[in-house]
Length: 304
Length: 233
View 1 (spheres, chains in turn cyan, red):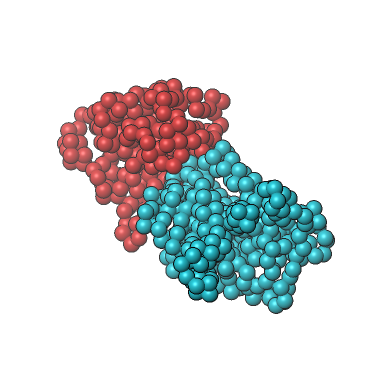
View 2 (cartoon, rainbow over the protein chains, first blue to last red; view 1 turned 60 degrees about the vertical axis):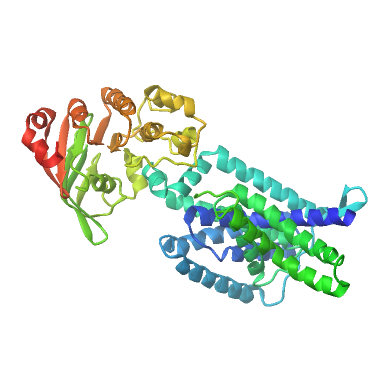
């Protein structure tokens, strides 16, 4: 039971990371109608900058601030130089151009930081454990990630539902021409939205630093799950991204933990472990398929 | 106040405006009349910077605006009520009104939420409803109120009463009359000639992308042949 609860928290933590990634991607996809494969590269930029600043200054907070600033600025630069030319283009053009950006950023990180991964320590303050459930100590750092996700979700909720900027972004998502005809600079708004999405990806990358190896290409693996999240949640929906990210995080984590054990009830151990692992890695995609059959535009469609 | 001189515009390779000349006097209500497909909406889109102008000049408040982006034109003080309403379906009625609210005319008594609700009181009961939950008439009133919330010097209404029930239509005309009395400069595109002859001061008729007649309500009302030829009345 304790192990199950621990896995539940792990699932929550993965869900939060996926939410930070998918919130930005779903905004860009939903508002600007651009498929940005390079979103994972902004996650990688965040991780590299956080690790570098942390290794030089010893301050995790400084690393975190540098990471989100760098990712936000790089994101806005990418929007200005590349994506702005892709808004009216075919999705295939967008996929090709942003795939090119992935290659560019991967190579750039190798040129700047080399091929050896960087390793970031968990900050001292968060290096211990907390007994959330009596008898099951859980790493403070992972709890901090969950807390950060909750804070970001609350911030996005307030931004989008209770500020004029949020109203304008939502209005722009449904009718760009009309909001511009009311005096809103939609190009600037797009750059800001892209910067916000990049900043959140950078935050996710920075927080993943102490958990994963910081290396070139690290953005690709999480990018695929991020796309699964926004498809399940409904493209353009922050609420959908939150719910879907938690679902995917749970299914991914609990599937890997429970399916082999479940199959052992019917199959020999070796077969059960192999089949369980295979099924676990498929489970997220099976979840996506089921959601799409029941709700073809995702759980919370925006452009229905 | 707003002048178009020799304005030409294209949709792709098809020319839709062939040298449009048009003038709006400050404080007047002017109409742009014509049958469907003659270029009325294209004129509005060209004024608003949505349809690129290939030749000609559009002057507003002493500045050439034909190359400006849409948002800059709106900020100079041109508010549009577009054909088809185009309210934001995913925003509540209140949010539709507040999202872009501004005082671009620099009025000392600008329109705000309370003020526009006195012009269209029916909207007051639906403030928390989303745009896509409103009836056609409510959406149309909202579209006019939303344009007023940026406090434009010139208000352009493109087919503001199209497809509405007579009672709702009367409500829109009542609102426009209030605005006219307050001295708001208005350009109206509509098919209700009877009402327009009463409300408007000046009329332009457009045919195949060209303004072919301009004159006062009295002249237009007196010319049955003109009405029949260009407006099919």
